[in-house]
Amino acid sequence: MIDLNSKKPLIIAGPCSAETVEQTLQTAQELAQSGKVDIFRAGVWKPRTKPGGFEGMGIPALPWLVEVKKTTGLPVAIEVANAKHVESALAFGIDMFWIGARTTSNPFSVQEIAESLRGTDAPVLIKNPMNADVELWNGAVERFAKCNVKNLGLIHRGFSGYGSSQYRNTPMWHLALEIKKRLPELPIFCDPSHICGNREYLQEVSQQAADLNFNGIMVESHITPDAAWSDAKQQVTPADLVTLLDSIVWRNEGSDSVAYQTSLDELRGVIDRLDDEILKLLSRRMEAAEGIGRIKRENNVMILQSSRWNQVVERVLARSEELGLSHDFLNILLEAIHIESINKQNHIMKSEQ
Image (cartoon, rainbow, N blue to C red; front, side, top):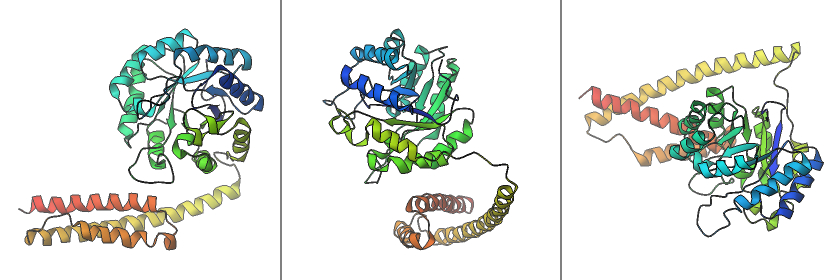
């Protein structure tokens, strides 16, 4: 049985898809020879956004993974999306499973898979859902736990968003930290391949995961990535994967150094005092929002003033470089402030009628 906590970092790697027996075995052999990879992954069934694309080799690819285990000694992992996938995979002795983002988004599918894996010792890693919904992610874990699937873990692969972005899927690291806070006993792995959608950004995303104390990464590697039948741009050769892994700094969780602890305590004290000031300022801001709500009520004006709010956002974002704060952070902060301001004004509208 695979112990997801046996080492840190735990590295899961392999091609997006098992395309041919030669491609699968050669990739696995090169990854095993590197000595850097703990578990071999390969897509057998590939749910695609649109029909007509390559959707995996299916059951014929499972014997290839049996051969990978035999020749390299690496455990093998695949994605499963329904009970039939699980049944076939178990029959071929697949060691580990992951639940894809599309599947996690559907509680009916999650329940079906959980029932089919009831009581199994095989590790099951659950990717975050496509949409930014921690409750849905947490709920998927609960469904497996209630089916006595005990060897569970999480995969952070980013969240779908509308519009252009540097990444294929926005990391939204705060949501990964939230699920870690809720489920501290579960190991969590980062999937930089699906966050990035492009090998160019793999290192920086992997390093971010390491700095946030993730348990490891699951990354896609292919002997000829540019010729891959699926997700070519986000895969790297086994040799490039070694370079990537060597570049990631996995730091200690703490230090016994007195100087370290003293310096840390001093700066944490500064943060605590600043947090108190920030909270007091936010309270004063909400008092001003309540005052605006009263004026709007007296003049029979609606709460939401989109043009005004757009001006606020533009003004703040224009100062992001000066302040040393990212647009992503400021957008999240402003959205939270806006929602609370609207709630305050809505309360005024209702309570003073």
